[in-house]
Image (tube, helix red, strand yellow):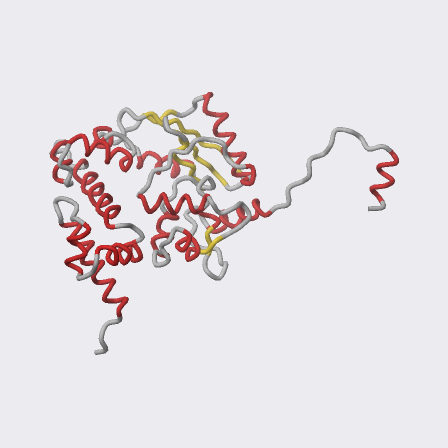
Length: 301
C-alpha cells in the first residue's frame, strides 16, 4: 500500500485529538495536545482549526456544553452533578459558560424551558405559512413551511415546557414587520435577534448576514471568508441548523456551480427569495405633478 498522504496523517492527528478532548474530564491544555501529536503548539493550533473549523479551546467548550446538556437531560442527576461531570470545577463557571450555549439558565433547560416566555404567531406570506417567535432577547425563530401544525411542533420541540404565548394582539405588529421583510428582503429587518449556536455556527451566520441582498456565495467561499477553507461541509451543516429564515440569509448560499440546493425550507422558497432580492425596486413617485414643459422635455430624454 502507498504511504498515507500528509493531509491524511494530519486528519488522523486531529481526530485523535478530538477523541482525547471528548474523553477528558477537564479540557486538555494546548501544549499537551500538541506534544501528543508531535507538533509545536502553534502548528497544532493551525492544523486543528483548519480541519474542524474551531480552535481546540472552542471544541473543548462545545464538548463540555454537550456533556452538560446530556447530564441535565437525566432527571436522576442534580444540576451540580451534571456540572462537575461535564468538566466544570466551579459551579459559578458552569452557569456563566453554559447559559449562552443552552439559551437559558441550566435549571430552566432541565425543565424544558419552564419559566421561559416565548410569544409566537402564525401568518401567511407569499412563501406559504410563517411562524415568528420572540423571546425576551429578540426574535428567536422565523420558520417557513406548508403546514402550520408542523411549524408549531418544531417550536414546541425546542422548548417543550416553555410558556408559548399565542394570539397576543401586541405581537401582531411584530409579525407584520417580519412578513414585510420576507416580502421585501432588501428593506432589512430592524428588530433584535436572539441568535444562539456554537461558536462556529455563529461565525457562519454572521458571514451570511454580510452577503449583500441580491448576491450569493458558495459554501466554499463562505468557508474561506471565515478563515476555514477546509470546513465546507461544516458550513453547510451550520446553514441547515439556522432557525431564522431570511434574517440569517442562508438562502444566499449556493453550490460552487451556482446551482440552488440544500435549503432547509425547500429549493423553491430559496429561488423565490433570491428572485425578490433581485427584483428591480420601483423609483419613488413624487407627489408634485410635472408641468407641461417638464413632461414635454421628459419625452425627449
